[in-house]
Image (cartoon, rainbow, N blue to C red; front, top):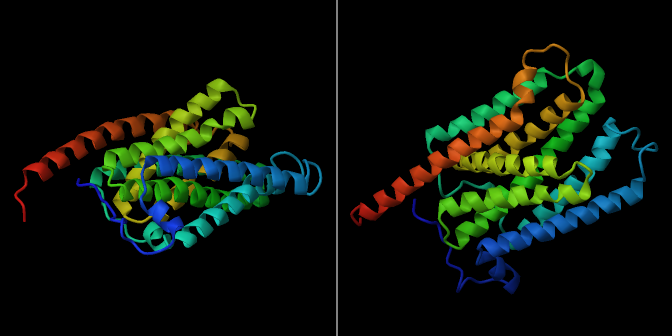
Length: 286
């Protein structure tokens, strides 16, 4: 697949826009690092305003605790990203039709994620969780999908393509930035090194699947919604599993299923892109 490049040397507009219109991986990393810092500041600010658990936030894991502690910072982060996109005039580019499309085998990753999410949702003890918590997680998940996909499959992909990078590099940098953002959990949570390492590997291959979903569907909204269905279902299942549900076997293996699926699809993708490049190189000029 030929690289997609946007010529910007003589593009009109402010220096701010021209800087970002040049794209490339280091601008993608810079943007992700700045966003991560902004998100952490927003999390601290939300914690300072609403205080610890026990007040308006309620108990740990309650509907308000999920919405305020997890949802509100990511909602504010999504607003920041949308404002940044608007300042560059990129909203149409990010949410419009993609210039590079995919192939039917890319459905495999989407299917695996959907099966996991349906299995997790079907294995939730809804009586134990309660309607308020389910609604809180669904709303939170929608903004998690929006913010994280807008950053990594939106901005990062766009920046890489503007620099004329090939789609292999686009996929790897997009997934790598996504995984690196989750590496920070080692410092901001108490989950430990082993759990964080597993999460980084998982998010890298989940990012590969989301990139393939972007390629296949041609619209950013679909990986956003696919991602938005993942965090709530898996989190609800982890906190409120239904006893004896056979579907829970799939949900409990979700991390490993995503890693294996993403790794296999990455190999297939690398081979597919290599063949495309060879075909492009040998094709007669039109």
